[in-house]
Every structure is written in structure tokens, then in C-alpha cells.
Image (cartoon, rainbow, N blue to C red; front, side, top):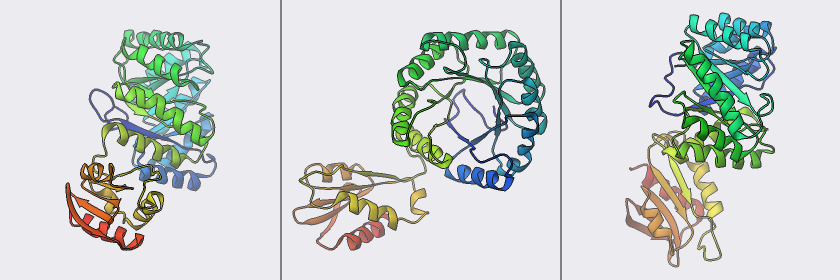
Amino acid sequence: MIGGLPVGEGSPLRIQGMLKSPLDEPEKILEEGRRLVEAGAEIIRAAVPGEDSAAVYGALSELGVPLVADCHFSPGIAASALKAGFDKVRVNPGNTPEKGVLETAEAAARRSAALRLGFNSGSCGAHGSEELASLALEWDDKLRKRGFENFLVSMKSPSVTATVDANRFFSMRSDTPLHIGVTATGPPREGIIKTSAALGALLVDGVGDTIRVSLTDESVEEVRTAVILRNAVFGYGDALEVISCPGCSRSRIDVSSWLDTLISELAPEDREKPLSIAVMGCEVNGPGEASHCDIGICGTRNGALIIRKGKALKTAESGEKEMIRMLIREFRKL
């Protein structure tokens, strides 16, 4: 449990966002937090580099979601964060003395706050995924033997395979909830691919209770990527799913252009419908794959064909915008 948010034990996967604005600009960091929550973050984490930095909780408390303080080196920093009101603290046993980690666990328990033991390959001294996981398991055992229950563990590495192997190794030996992510992922495009490869593999295996996507990009892009990843693995739930073919030399329509037009014409309320919509390029797979969606459009030799609930609705040779608007009108009847 993080604040009032259930985590683990059958709860949905939770998305965490990490703030990047300067702590000495409370209005800016609060606005960033609002953007992250709007984008889908259910938990917000802030770096708290010093005891005085915990005061940022005052501004962030307006967000209405659980708040996490990221604390390193000194147990005094974590104690200040807990005193300020943070719902969870993340500590790093790789750079915090053992006594300090245990003191933080005790302080968190007294305040009914959660704790995360965050093991990073760059700071915990572990070499290889099994050593990383074994170190995490040692600490997992230490806390459990002392009666602590409300904590999570994370094991992160810049390596996709090391991240996957460490988390799989741990999850086979402990039922402690896991926060998963890949760290230091590089440029945004590479970061998205690395993250999707590692976290996708873990989530399909049922490993992971909270996630944070780490990108060298704006924090809101991290959250948006996490939402897309979660939806891709577990389904879109109450959100609209849009599918499209990659296009090829057979395409009867410019799939990329038609897709852009569709996205631009959809209203915010359209995106909140638990439906699926397709844009397909030709008659080879287009009709069949569009039929798997609630509604779709595909290019054919006779023009663009709209298919709704598996049935051909109409074919027309009208222009791109007119056909997309026709598609949306039919979509809104669903």
C-alpha cells in the first residue's frame, strides 16, 4: 500500500512518474506533477537530495496521488521526508549504511508509510544479474525477519537482459512487490525500445507491480510511454485503441497521412471510449483486420471501405478528410 493506493497482491499495475523540475521552483514542479497525473501517473516521485528539500511535499500534496521521496546517502534525509508527509521513501542500500536503511524502515513503519529498496547496478556493487538479485534477496530477508511488510524492491540496470534476469530471479524466490524499470537508457528512441523489451518481457511473465519508464526526455513522455506499454500488455480498458498497418507498395491509401488525420480529428471524449478503430492500406489483410476492431477503414481498388462490427458499411472514393470524418461519424454511433 502506498498512501491509499493498493500495490501488489492482485492490484493493477501502477505507473510512477518522476519529477525533473528544480525543487526551488514550487510552481513549476507542481505544474509538472499535474501534467504527469493527467497523462496517467498514479504515483509521483521526487528527488530529495537534502533534509531541507523535503519541504517540496507542501506543494506536491495538492496533486492528490501518493508521493514518493527518492533519498540517498543519509537516513536523516529519509526521516525528514517521512516527517514532511511523503507516503513512501526510496532508499539505496548501495550508498546508505545498513544501520541507516534499517532506521528508515522503522521510521516508515511507524508512520504507516511504504519503503522501496532500490538496487541500481551502478551503485550497489553487484556484478551481473544474479548477484544483483541475490543482494536484493538478502535485504528482502533482513526486512521480513524484522517484521517489515509494506515495502517494495527494485533492481535496475542499463542492460535489458540484466534487468529481466535479475527481476525473474528475484520473483521466483520472493513474493515482495517489485518496482521495475531500466535505468540510463540512452537517447529517447533507444530508451523506449530498451524499456519496452525489458518491461514487456517481465509484464507478460506477470512480474512487476509498479513501473517507471526512464528516458532522457520530458517526464510526461516517460508517463505516456508507460501508459502505452501497460495498455499494449494488459489491454486498453476504458481507452480507445487505434491500430494501423505499416503500409507497403500495395497500399491504396496513404496510411500514415490518413492515420494522422484520424488522430487530429478525434475529440478528447472519443479517446475515452473502450473501443478500437483501424486504418488499413489495402484489401489483402485490411478488411479482416479491420473486422477485428469495432470500426475501421481500409483502402480497396474501389475506394475506401468502412467496416463496422465486422460488416462492410460503405465504400466511397471521397477525399481523405471526408472519408475520415465519415469514419468518425460512424464511430460515434457506437
